[in-house]
Image 1: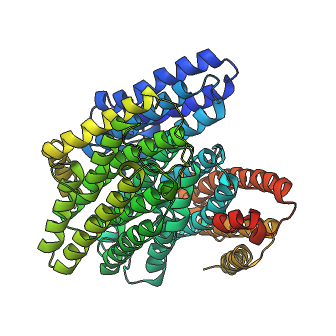
Image 2: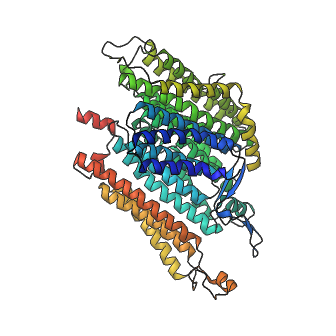
Image 3: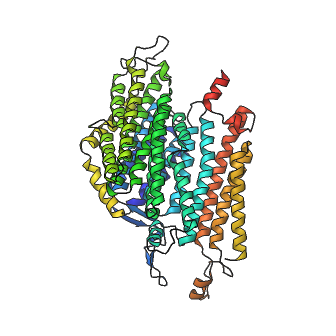
Length: 484
Length: 128
């Protein structure tokens, strides 16, 4: 059933185009979007693991050099891809569901952007071709900009343009890096490039090779929102609709891990690569949580916390051992779920109060107890409180850094987790526990049931992954073992 | 390396550097976008230069051509295919950027990024 592998990209892509074309038929669009969205998590679960060669062009042997090469774009599908694509599919379904139930008249272009982004990140996860990854990286940037610009929040256009300008500088720089790799190896297939590098066909100390690392690394920093792009990344989360932000952060996490895994396969022999990844990850952890502490806009606060959590993922991958990379990927999965829960939950609060400033909020526990409790559990999971999923991945990361001989990094990771806890508890107290300010008008609006449903589903996954982490750790670990 | 290829590589480097200068230091948003296009075209030109082969032929196998002669004389076609895709993406990005600029120009009546893209919190204070 390997034919299902390309369908994971084709289905959302075609759905996006069809929805955009027929958006004037509101009811049909709604039904079609719902049906496609429900298919998205099902396709990866129903598909078998394996490879898909586009055009049926399988790897060939070069008679002159006696080296195998891939003449066509290849999609590789194994357990981590399955779990991540299923999770993105589920999240897209929940976001589309919230959107469809929130508005009577839906916007075709907005649904187009949601599905386009999903298709792009899915392709980035599946592809074994660095240029194909770049193409979808660009498409993803366009979708992200569109999702931000489509929101009704003040200054969303300005933020979208800012993000786009930075992206338009970052993308060609990354393309130059890919060009350097192409010049060195004659291929854009990651397996072929990695084979050429590790078989000594490429001089790893050559300035061109090192420059290609620097250029692709710059593109990765932009895609991941790691410093120096952390401010703009948290900015776009705060300017998107909350359910859109939930999806945007998952796009960031997926693009981060897909690019870093490709870089890892090519550059892992260079010690500087791991040093760079760990350095920027630690910087993200520290800056993310420090800036989150100073925020009064809670959307921006979660944005910075999300950037800090990205640092944990990078840390795991930068440490480079099987256990550490497994921990990093598990952390990525947890971050997607936990941050989505927080964005949707806080979105429910915006919906009810029309206020985002924590200084002007208070006493909301009495008005929205369900949302409060779910947000509390989500926040505790992000801070790494047992037995929730965030605890398991952070514990693994601390153990991994200890076993790699870096106790100082593990101490730092624990301190950042504690700071995350402080940030969350402070915000939770300000919004839910302290007495309601007199001038705060809590409208009698109920939180939409679709939001409660989405949060409930995400919460169940957080608790399940916290109690039974082996459900995913074993599969990810064997994939990482194979990659190493 | 042929002289032509070297000249192309220098041109692409010049385009990237001029583009970076313009995108980072110039305040006018349209000039910034032109700079961004320069960077994109510099990258594209660089990739095209990789596929160049001195004395090579167009990589299209015509009837009657000897395949081994063709294999050793044809230019490398992969970079051209990649650049074609990259140009299309660049055009889409440019269109979206210009559309956003149009909306913001109508709102602010200026093309200065200092006014248009100033920090939103500062803008809020300024508005008050």
